[in-house]
Image (cartoon, rainbow, N blue to C red; front, side, top):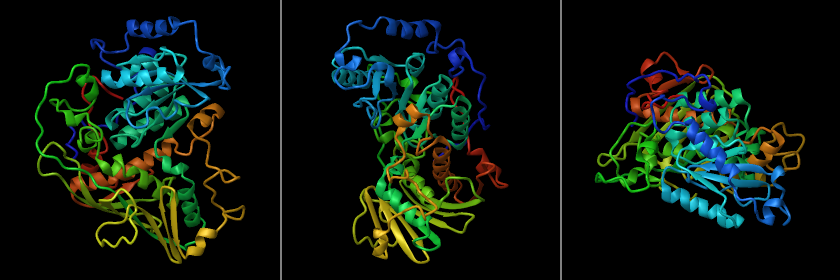
Length: 465
């Protein structure tokens, strides 16, 4: 699935260059040039002076000075998540596909009843706007690291869709950038906001099922497809920019079609992380593994497409053994919902089943099941050591509230990196077709140079982090 990198090294954070953004070759034409920067600033100055009453706060919405000013980079999943709120002001969208960004601009303008939303092809032009407080990133996975790091250096708070990054090394670079620039970060693993799932995790963490022994995870399987024709690049699609740091490839429409790009190893490690990071993250939370522990042994096997351009696993069987003795058995599953009376011996039910010495808990979005059933009547209170919600039982404030209050989000960057790494460990074990042992404190495989080389991969010039 992962092609051996031609140049293997952990990326180093470069010195802040032009506007503190990604360092690029001086000869490239799409860099954040002085002209582009001035164009973005002048665009703000030239905005119409006549604005709707809603912008001035006369319809019950907050006045502009009290709102979080936002832009979206990549018109992917839920790019408009923070648009229709009284405490935010959307001012810009960015996508390398003209049709997508114009559609997004029109949606923003329609909501505010004006024509002021700016649209950009290059994310650096959006980040150069000083009035923007925060950005929502919904690009393909191979862009997450570069854009998040650039946003952090520009002083923008970040909500980044899952998974955090394409490689382990990129994840570490993102963590360093978020810490260095002291921004608020939230990962798109929204199951950490689900009250039922949090309750199930609290039952496990507080010992209501005895000693946790095994976790069984079922997450959606990948896809296969036949050969695809090479096509001309459609008008309005910047194919060079879409590929960015990924290896160059001839254009075919399935490479940019959601969700098909998940199944190209150039851009993603497949649905193991593209969807599975949700369950890896929640299982990690339920097991109390958000902080690094001892070595993790992973033995994973997968089935890969035999034809066509898709090259990430579409079926898998992954076994994790943690230092505290807890094991995970994680399989693909054909159903996107946790079907009742599931009895497939080789594939787990969609969701997460946590088995202990005195019972079990099953969690899925807005669903918790347990044995004995009396566990469902437990009231988590002051006597319980682990509380995953606020004292009053409400979830931790969402991203916008955390930006306003300077708080740590429910899915901070360190946790996002660890959850995504768990997915990468399975993918690397599949690539090598053998077990691997991971040291989470050192972030390296134990005495395993072939595996360590797969922590990173070369980026296509001139992109670098």
